[in-house]
Length: 493
Image (cartoon, rainbow, N blue to C red; front, side, top):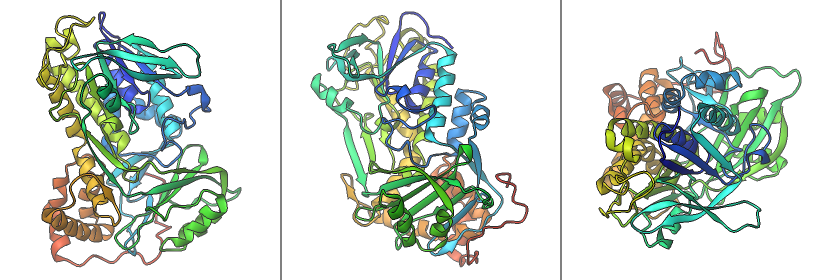
């Protein structure tokens, strides 16, 4: 895949959202990714500083896998060859919530389990091999070049270098720099308006320890041990099998109840979970490396699609547009789905996109300015808002899940509206749904299709879900951890 003509796009941020965005844009322009991290700072496939969640558990749910495979055919096979593991839900999981263990029915969906470092490395190398994309690693963006009418590039500098910042001209700048993006501040510096922002923060904090089985240890007969929180029990525990024969254990709690970051305290924290099996199982494993923490877990949404004085030539995508509480495992999937949506917009908008890289113009309808890509650049104020609306729309289901759930948590700090009467009624219904899912394979199938971002939230009101949720008592489930399932085959369900 190669760029065309003299057009140039700059993508700020080289993680999954940025790399996939660059891939899509490379069919229409030469693309430069500017990535702050020095990628050789981390070991091969290891975590890097620019992704706060990198050392913690990651899953790529089915909706994300479908999107990634459509962008890079064969990539799931490449990831599997490097050790990424498909985990069938609920068959490959031992799950506990609200005092009940889930029945391990045949899998209705699968998520991909691997470390974030492996995923980013495999995808990045594949995209760079496609051509048309240049990666400037160890380089940080310090501001936007342009004015309130049009962004014409970025100002950058090499990390650790004594030289002054220099400018990179661009016809389009895409912010894929993540939840800590500085672009809203940079917009104000050039006389434009930052987008409205909503934050929903439970104060949840993570601590994560890597483990390996001790010599001679038996396989536990599952790929994931998962303690889910509820209104009475706010702790979350995930122990997930990843590549290289390792397991990643992430324990989290709300503000004031975070897991310690020393190995002994981490293990002792597992006593607080509603069943002793979590600590018992962790105590049989051998810790690898240090315990790492993460406190950056707020849901953050930036409303670029709303009217405002913002320049032509700028888009936001991924966590820079909408970031989620990592407990829900949605961020990477939404980023991949947004890249697919952007590809569709670029592919169906006709000659103006081909000649002008989308004719992205000011949301306020400003005339913009001429750029190196041609006269069509800077036109089409409606198009910028329309593109941002498409990208924001991709995140709607994930936002409804994460923000909707977190708004109801005691002690949450939110800049948005609180739950209204309809929200409270919906929350009561969803609690009834959650109560039947552990023992009902049919209802569970629909429920998991929403969580895996392959179906809209309306699927939760399907008769196969609504009838048992409203009119039947939950079915009995195992009284102890269902560690043994006859015929377990490690992911084949």
